[in-house]
Each structure stands twice: as C-alpha cells, then as structure tokens.
Image 1 (tube, rainbow, N blue to C red):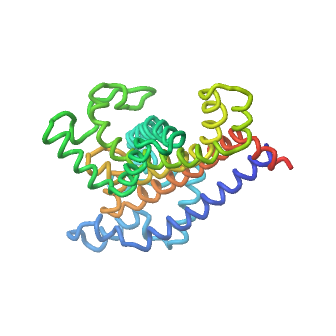
Image 2: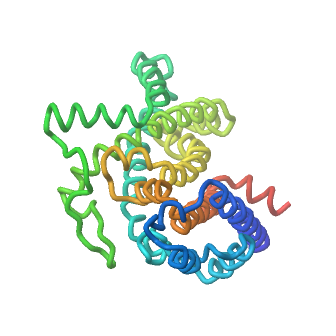
Image 3: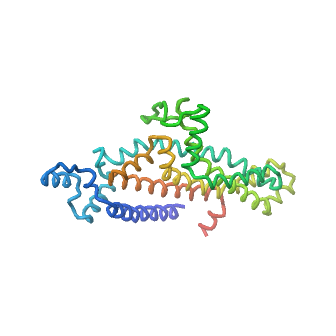
Length: 324
C-alpha cells in the first residue's frame, strides 16, 4: 500500500509540473495585459516602470522560473488588478464555489441513486422507463438555458426564490458559508439545481447499469439461494458493488463541477471562484488565471487520489491485484 501511494504521489507531482508549463506559457500566448492594465495617458518612463513593477519586463522563461520557485512555497503571484496574493484571492471566493458544487452532488446522489436503483431492479416498470427518458433531458439541456428558465419561472413569475446573489452568510472557522442560514439556502437552491440536473441523469444511468450487471453475478444468486431477504441482498451485495463506478465518477465530477461552475455563477451572480476567473480573463489578470487553473488541477489530482483509495477499499479485487 505504501509503495502504491508513493507511486501515485509521484505521478500527481508530475501532472502538476506538466500542467504548470501548459498553463503558464498558454496564458502568455493569448494577450498582453499591458494593453489593458496600463493607461494610455502614461508617458514612456511611467509605462516602463509599471511593466517592471508587474514583472513583465523579464524573459518569459525567467518569469516561469520565478513562478515555479514561488509555487513551491505556495506563492503563485499577485493579482495585477487587485494587487493582492492570487491564491488568497481565490481562496476567498472558493468556499462559495465549493458549497455550490457539494450541494449539487448531494442533490444528484439523493435523487439519482434511488431512481437508478429502482430502474435497475424493475426495468420493465413504466416509471423506470419514464425516469430513463427523463435522464436524456438532463444530458441535453444546456446549463445556461436551464438557469435562465429557473430564474424566469421560480423568481420572476412565482417569486418563490431569489434570482441572484449568495444571500445571508454566517462564519464558521473564519469562512463565510451560505448553508448556515435559511436565506443562504434559498439563494443556493436554483444554482445548485442547475448544476445538479446533469449529475442526476449521470448517477441515475450509472446506478441502473450497475444494478443490472450485478444482479446477474453469481454471488447475488448465491445470496438469494441462501434465503437472504431481498432488502439485505440489495443493500449488502447489489448496492455496494454498484457504488464502485458511481464513487469513481462522482469524485471526478466534483472537480469538473468546481472547474465549470463559471456559467452558473455568472447567471445567478454567485460570488464564487468561477465568476472571479471570468472577470480575470476579461482583464488579462494572468496571476489570478494561472493560480486558479493550478488550484483546479491540484483539486483534480487530489480527488483522483482519494477516488483511487476509495476504489481499493470498496473492491477487494483491486487490493489483491495490486499485491500480486
């Protein structure tokens, strides 16, 4: 186990290094922030001083080495626009994105898992067919259109839920959270549902496919032959084996939800990291964009590692193959 974990950590560090190269040099190829950040009313001397102050007067490879040296110590540079540490700025916005992503995944699990289990156990039931047909809509509807429809129906026409903002927050461990207040929950429902619809369809179809596959395996037939109750067979033998691909995909989907929450946060004016990165791209705030992408890559790599560990815990065959 220790050797496997060491190997996975080495792979994770390699991925972070390669992504740092791609992200850093990619950002320096799409535009010059000097054209946006430095006013035209400056004279040549003031312009050169501003460029030097931003660190843009050095060769690109020297800029990358400085970035790499700072990244080792957790310093990914200062924002050109806000003049504060880029990582600090992202971490101020990240809790809002995290709670939105976690809320969306919880909705997906609480709704998609029982529906998929029902559809897998009773595939010929009319409700099962309806659930599977409805899941196609979840895959097909774009998030921006769905968010706008939610705003039109539930905020503008019915007036049940707020259309924008994060609402009232309360601090816990020095961080402001929306889920600690009722007003915060009201503001979170619509953007969380917008993010969750695709995940609900995904969980539902994964669960149904897993249940149909596991039901045909010998250990399930043997459990039934022993006289175990249907509920015990489903909970202990069917659901546990079905959760292996579901856990794997959900772990990766959490990372993608954090990374791609930009559209939803923009529609609902949710003050998260996604809206910050969109504003930073528009202003060519390189340090913030690079720091955000590196943080997202780090989250993906960490989640992959956690998923691998959970996979080994859920499936004994993986542990046996690894030790062989």
